[in-house]
Image (cartoon, rainbow, N blue to C red; front, side, top):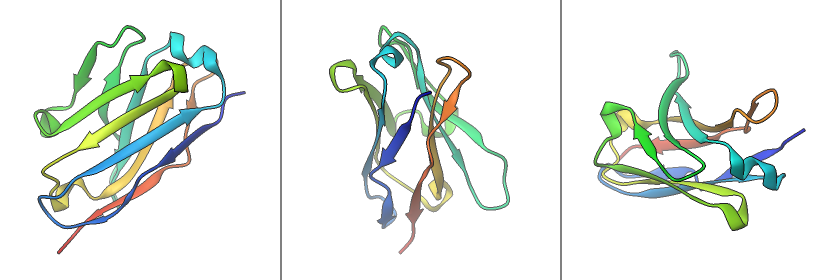
Length: 114
């Protein structure tokens, strides 16, 4: 079983930045892609970004040029640097790994508001 622990969420003003972190409890996760998803109130969970084990990345169109996903395999950690945040980015952000049965973190709240 894998535990994914997210951190870094919070309240930020429009135009601000946050960096989310997700740390896995097993080093084997480094062999798999890791992804970030988000779920806004009343909406379905949606894909945000993914990074392969080798570092290739992909983003949903609405965050391209503003968000950057990266990983530090030595720390079993994936990051999401979020810049130029706007209120539409307000959501609970989850990390996900397809390792084994697939695991989700508990989520971290990001609120963008003035």
